[in-house]
Image (cartoon, rainbow, N blue to C red):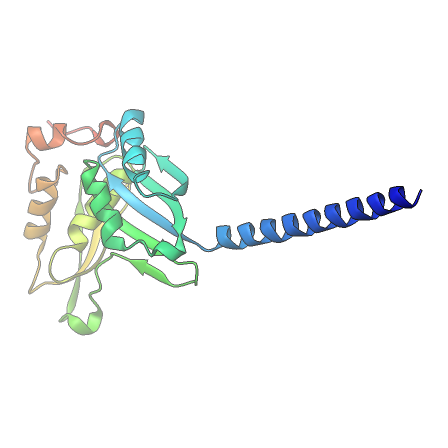
Length: 218
């Protein structure tokens, strides 16, 4: 009887210890999972599920990547990564290029709450007198929007650019002494988007992802 009581007591202590250890391990795992940076990249060139697969496969070279989401229509690509590995913006954009695509806007929300972006950092103070220019730019989808806005935002003297998918109108706030409508139109045609002043070459237009093939004026 005494032996049975001792065995029962031993088993009780063993299972209590195991339960506590499991709870502590689960708590530690949960804490580690929370310490992840969140990444969002707008990728140009994703035209089909195979493209998305190729992009995801390339990023799986980063051990520890999770929560991968890819929207083919808009080109939105997001994932999470362990904060302790300190994955940089440059490493992410370079990996997109290695996969055969073009990174547009990108944002990182670090586990500590800080936010990083690759958007132009020009400010009103750095520019002269701002001018607002409006022009029609052909396009069709969210991926077109990202491409158009990124192309224009990268031009010297541009503070910001916004293109409306429905109206096809592009609004640009810029320093007119550094960039004008003619330069903007030329750059947009170079990446595949027709304007009233410039038309993209057939080869450039054809190279756009299928979802970006807008109806061209004859």
